[in-house]
Every structure is written in C-alpha cells, then in structure tokens.
Image 1 (cartoon, rainbow over the protein chains, first blue to last red):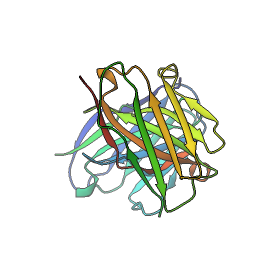
Image 2 (image 1 turned 45 degrees about the vertical axis):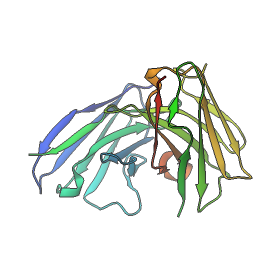
Image 3 (image 1 turned 30 degrees about the vertical axis):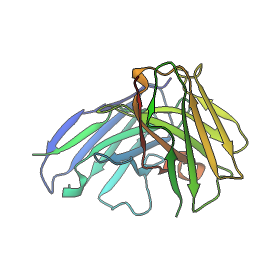
Amino acid sequence: DIQMTQSPSSLSASIGDRVTITCRASQSISSYLSWYQQKPGEAPKLLIYAASSLQSGVPSRFSGSGSGTDFTLTISSLQPEDFATYYCQQSYSTPRTFGQGTKVEIK
Amino acid sequence: QVQLQESGPGLVKPSETLSLTCTVTGGSISSYYWSFIRQPAGKGLEWIGRIYTSGNTNYNPSLTSRVTMSVDTSKNQFSLKLTSVTAADTAVYYCARETGTTGRALDYWGQGTLVTASS
C-alpha cells in the first residue's frame, strides 16, 4: 500500500492568513493526488484533483501543487468557512489511501 | 446533478453481516467506478473498495476476506456486504463516485450513514 503522510496534523490560523498543508507519498504517484475538505457532520468535498486542478465551484483561493511524492495545498487567504479538516488521497493504485488529515482551527 | 444516498440498517450485531446500498440519482451509474469509504468517529478516512459497472472490483487488502461489492445497473444501485463485523467496524460509511475525468478523484459523495456494531 502507498502511505500518505500529511503535515501538520493541526494548525491554528487567523482570517486572511495564507495556509499551507503538505502531503507526502511513500512512493511516486505522478499527479494522482486529490485534496478534500470535511466539515463536522458532513461528507468530504473534493477541492483539487490531479494535484493542481481546481474542482468546479471551488473558490480560487484554494490551489494545489506538486508531483511525484511531494504535494501542497494552499489557501491564499483563509476565510471563516475554511475552518475544517483537509485530507489528501492518492489514486495512483489500489488500495486508495488517504492522509491522516489536517485540522485547520481558528487562532 | 448527481446525488448518492446510502441506505441500510444502522445497527448490526457482532459476527453478523453489514449490508448497505447506495442509490445514484441524477445520472447514469454506467461507465464509472463506485466506491465505499468509512470513517470511525473522530478518525480518518478508510477506503473499503470500488466496483465498476461491469462488476470488476478492487478491495482493500485489510478487508478483502470480509467484503463483497455488487452493482445493479437496472436500479442505478451498488451495494456493500461486510461479514463477521466487530466493534471495530463501527463507523460512518460513505459511498462515492470515482471518475477518470477528474484524475480518478472522488467527485460525488453520499451524505454518509452511521453503522454501529453492537449487541
């Protein structure tokens, strides 16, 4: 199985801050990397696919980068509705695997 | 707009079989992979497996001895069976669509259903 490791596990930030979350794969996954946002009591929501493509309807303050083993999710200016948990997921091979999640909290 | 809805018992006795169905509306079930993912309370996401509309399946090796997925294209539904459940199988279970046009990401999700394994 491909292991996905996110960092940090949690972070505190203020409205307007630039936030960066990283995800590392245990082997190369090309660009088969997605990012999801999950709020309490809700299903995950797709934000970024193919490492850097913005899903339709997702605000442009979200962006993704990387390829191979190292990936980044950036929120350029944190908004109140962005406080949530974020997960990366590889779709290079089965079993699909997720990172452990990064909880973004209000400072 | 594609929508997914999980259905099935919310309570399953230990050693018995968990059965869930996911109904897809607003679009055809054909020509996609359909997945089940679960999430224990307060924990992360675990991929259970996926099924293509041809019936081809891939399962998580950690669960493969207990998991069976099936698809009914006439009803636009796919299903999950997990045998010999224990308390460790208590989780919110989600169904989701995987599409090649979004880098094989999971672009549509059901709202999730809580399944508790308890006597």
